Image 1 (tube, rainbow, N blue to C red):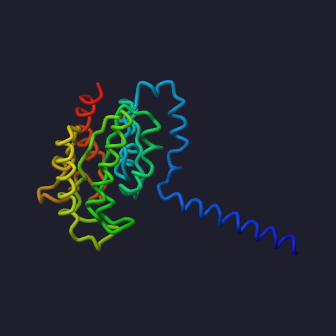
Image 2 (cartoon, helix red, strand yellow):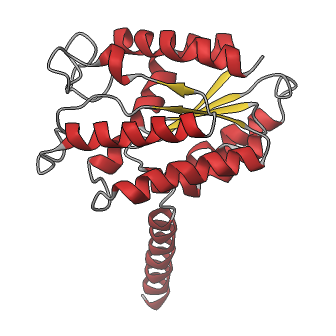
Image 3 (tube, rainbow, N blue to C red):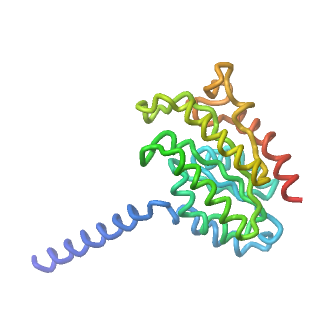
Length: 231
């Protein structure tokens, strides 16, 4: 009886430790840990590598349009639900340590949606600037992009002014890119609906995440910039 009780207690402790460890991996370093190891051991690694860093929009892109990534030697490092704070934490693991030629950063959607904190434009913008500075310090070319249009977020209806926040953040990112001679990709303009604020049904099923048609628009916008930046 005592032995069984001790075994049960040991199991509970082990499960609790595992759960605690998973919860403490706020940046989700484990998401691409194995993939990064495999990438670094690949003989093609020295030739390739433009990393796309982002949230579910980037993750869905790599999943829905794998040929775009494979054919161009691009690597997707998007994690659903993440904010720019989490991107910054895992920037070394998922970007710098891969020694890419360039990184395409798409950040801000989940910050505005307040996924894990109250939105603060200065801090979100600062996180993007910090990632750009880290990349440049490690001889990685940076490509900055706009936040995609969104009239609101189905998972957080309390955010009522998403379009205004997105436009303001996009303006700051574009201004920073221009002043620092960083390539900039405007996804917003070719994707936005006639109302000037939303992602239309022809490009999205939920007003936030692109369909294949939406990703095709994004590919047409970003690919020429990458080819010009990474010759």
